[in-house]
Amino acid sequence: MPEIPDLEVIRRFLNERLLGKEITRAAELRPAMVRSLAGEDFAADVIGRRFGTLTRRGKMLTLPLEPGRLLVVHPMLTGAFQYCDPTAKVAKRAFFYLGGEGFDLRYIDEKQMGLVYYVRPEQLSLVPRYDDQGPDALDAGLTYEQLVARLKPYQGEIKGILTRGEFIAGIGNAYVDEILWEARVSPFKRRKALTEDDLRSIHAAIPKVLNEAIDVLRERMVPDIHVKVRDFLKVHRKGGEPCPRCGHPISELTPNQRITSYCRHCQPGSLLKN
Ligand SMILES: [Zn+2]
Image 1 (cartoon, helix red, strand yellow):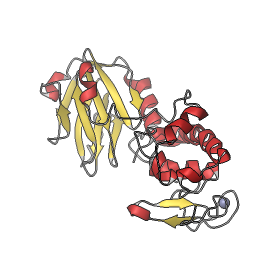
Image 2 (cartoon, protein in one colour):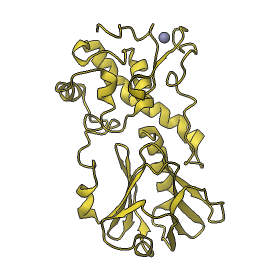
Image 3 (tube, helix red, strand yellow):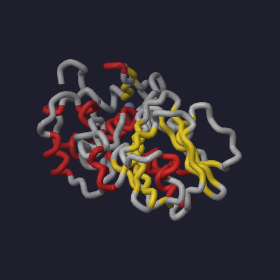
């Protein structure tokens, strides 16, 4: 699933190339992906509009198509953008494209899990989950005190809380493992058992892990922004490999069908008692 680092690289890459460019060609290659709340035929309506500055909120990207339209994309598990030459072979699971002089921006979705909305700016709040999101995890203004205050109402294990978009937006199953490893906090530690040290470490680890990943991904994803790169992560899906910090083998569990990777040595805490 794209998380903040992936989406930030995509956002910056597309802003460098698309800003001000006019859409002169567009088509829906498969039906029922774009939900047009703006009421018009999406592919016909985008012609002549120009790309504004892409923004990101949590795991959603918003592409302004000016004047007066927004394309809001929530890629979920499998959605991706491909930026390519118009002559490039079209992927099997491409759902639509927006094309202009010398470029195609295609939306590909292997399992059709993503959500794409075409709206007028005043309809943004109609996009499901858009307004329900908590502060963005990369928001430099999120203070330690705010993080602690936001945590208060939540029970349960810290990993589950950090991946809830309404608590803090943009962190998913992969980067939460990285953040908790960086902070040396067990993913199974319950919120009430967290010490001030734990909380300060988590607060510091969030931007550190996300920003470092953005730097790596900028090198690795560009120009193929539709390809997911995760092999550089330190613990997520690295079960059995040595922990990069202490050398003990990384543990991997799949509670609730979600893989959790962590180092029992660096991130101590019993599964049952903490
Ligand atoms: Zn370790």
